[in-house]
Amino acid sequence: MLGVVCFMCPGMFNALTGLGGGGQVDTTVSANSTAALYATYAFFGFFSGSINNKLGAKLTLLLGSWGYALYISSYLVVNIHPGAGDYVIVAGAILGVCASLLWTAQGAMMMAYPTEAQKGLYIGIFWTIFNVGGVVGAAVAFGQNFRASEIGNGTYIGFLVLSTIGVAIPLFMKSPKHMIRTDGTRVQTVRHPSWRAEFWSLFVALKTDPMILFLFPMFFASNYFYTWQFNDYNAAIFDIRARGLNNLVYWTSQIFGSMFIGYCVLDLSSLRRRTRAFLGWALVFGMVFVVHVWAFFYQRTYTRAGEAQVGVHKIDIYDAGYAAHVWLMIFYGLLDSMWQTYAYWLMGAMSNDPAKLAVFAGFYKSLQSAGAAGVWRADGVGLPYMSIFLSTWCLSAGGMVCALPMVYLRVRDRTEIEDETL
Image 1 (tube, rainbow, N blue to C red):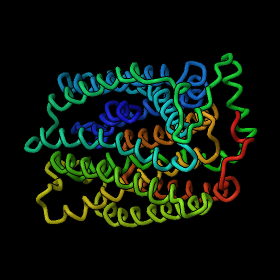
Image 2 (cartoon, rainbow, N blue to C red; image 1 turned 180 degrees about the horizontal axis):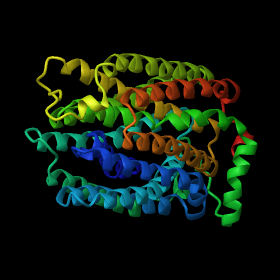
Image 3 (cartoon, rainbow, N blue to C red; image 1 turned 60 degrees about the horizontal axis):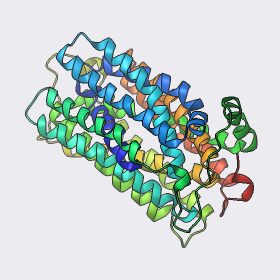
C-alpha cells in the first residue's frame, strides 16, 4: 500500500517531470517551480523525521500526499491560462513541504518493516511499484500526445485524478505499531515525546552515529542529475512525441535497476553484508562513469542558445539517430534506481529503529532537495547546458567517493544492539 501511495502521487509527479518542463514548451516556469519545491523541501526535510516521530508515520504520510494533487492541478491551470505561472511556483513551494513529510514517513517504514536479510528486496519491491506509476503516467502521456506538438489538458486531468486517489490510501493503512516482520519480531514502536525532545534527536543522531556525515555528499547529489536528464537533454533536443517515449522507457528501466541491485546484489545470501555493500558501491560508481562519458559526447553537439532558435530540428522517434539517444535515457533510469536503492539500503544497514531511520531519511531528503533546488534554479536562469552537465558528473562521482569510508568503517554483517536506539 505504501508503494501504491507513491505510485499515485510521486509516480504521477515523476511522469510529469520526466516530460521535461512538465510537458510545457517553455521550461522556465517549471524549472523555477521545481527550484521552489526543492528549496522548501530542503528546509522542512531536515525536521521531517522529528515531525514523523511526533505525529506517527500514517498521519505524516496522509499530510504529505495531498501536495502532489495540488501541484499537478497547477499545470492544468497554466495550460488553460498561460499567464498563471505564479500559481505553478507557489504550488511547487507547497509541495516541497508535503513531499518532505511523505518521503520521510515512507523511508522510515520501508527500512524498518523488513528483516535485515530482506531490506534490499523490500526496497526493490517499493521502488518497482512506485516506478510503475511513472511508467503508467508516461504511457498515458505518450499515447494521448503521439500526434500532438504540446501536452493536452486530458493528460493533466488523468494525472490529477490518479494523484487524488492516492491521497485517500493512507486512511486504510495500518499503523507501524501493528506490523509484525516475517521472522515474527515486531517493528519497534516509535516514541512520541515532546517536540523539543524530537528536534533534539536530530543532534543526538549525528552525535551517536557521525558516520552518516560521509553519506551527505551522496545525499546531496541524489536528485541533482534530474535537471540535466529531463530539461537539458530530454526537453532540449527531442520533440513532444520523443520526449514521451523517452519518459516511458526511463521509468520502465528503473523497475529493473532497483530489483537487480536490491534483490540480486544487496540481499545475496551467499555473501556477507559487508561484501554486498562494497559490491553495490562498485556497481553504482561504475554506472556513474558509463552514463556520463556516454552523455558527454552528446552534450558537446548542442547548446542552450542553439536549441532555443526558432525552427531548429528536434529529434523524433523516426529519426536515424534516435535509437542511440533513447538508450542513454534507459541507462540513466538504471543509474537513478540503483543509486536510490543503494542509498536507502546503506541507511537501513545502520539501524532497524523506525525513529532513528526517520531522522536519517529526513537528512537524506533534506540534502537531496538542497542540491536539486540549486541546480533547478541554475537551469531556470539559463546556465549553459555543459556547465550543468559537468557539475552533475563531478557531484555524482564525488558523492560516491565520499560514501566509501562510511561503507568501510560502518557497515557490519549484522546491526549491533547499540544501533537499535536513537
